Image (spheres, rainbow, N blue to C red):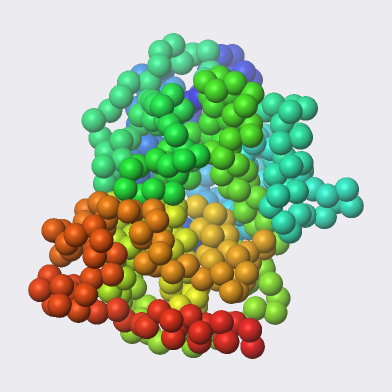
Length: 438
């Protein structure tokens, strides 16, 4: 209810409170278009029910509609609004291509029905398309994009809008959770508060063994928290220095990838940002199969994949390590990894996930150079030095010494029932460099 511009403005225009709050589910289409995971859809459904319940307690009726496809949304929603005598409808703008087309179809039918519609900007710090070069073009490098974004923020800080006046109490915490992720606006807000009060993000964010990240991404991906709330709370807790923090920089990366999707719709259509990037990757299917099951024989890679399969979430450092392994060392098409992530992530954000995979595969905007290939063992020793994270998610290796767990000997692997590596790192790296160079 907080920082929901559509809900706030509807309340302002409707004698204090809206007549109804409506949510249109379109789960089949979301699975088809964006490969949304069951975990994310379950999380969304739980939060919608929580929101509707809170609205009902305040005398505002909540309605959930189900549409099979985006094409069904316009007639379904319009018929509902006509039936309930609605004269004005407010919504927050969707930024992805097919969602925009869906909303345009809604507008056509609303105009025909004589129902006024009002669109509002939410989800991002600024409306997409505003942070641009002097010639109006989109930045293709992150650093100058971030520089201008921060300059605009210093000039005009976009504050989150409050909850409507008819919301007379803070949300109650619920005991519901999805894969261990607490449901509800109260839980999300508390997690944001706790993280900003006690984090050492700059020093711990790359350590999967110490839990140094905010783990707010599921709430951002579903709109339970907004980027404006995150920034405002960071400044409230840490002062203006928060603007230059590493965590705020990550919020700007989120804006950058979303803005690229806004500017270049081809990115929604499985195309690479770099026009010269190859579409035919030679990696064999058995390597992808081992990777997706977490049995590559590279402990940190397997631990990352198993964390995803078990929790619906993966530490950001491991997203880079596992993606680099699949694209650079196995030469498997990055789109297979992108789809796999979306099919399992509870925080799957289509733009950010696509941007991360194109970055890792050197096919995207401001991507890692083709010769930057993560060494899984080096990454493991550096960011999980005692092997605690590996031991948590690869139980076969529990009890193996901290020195050996990053690359167990053949004898240890046999004793533990852990597989031998599916590739030879040095040979695969040489092959990858040659293929990318050509």
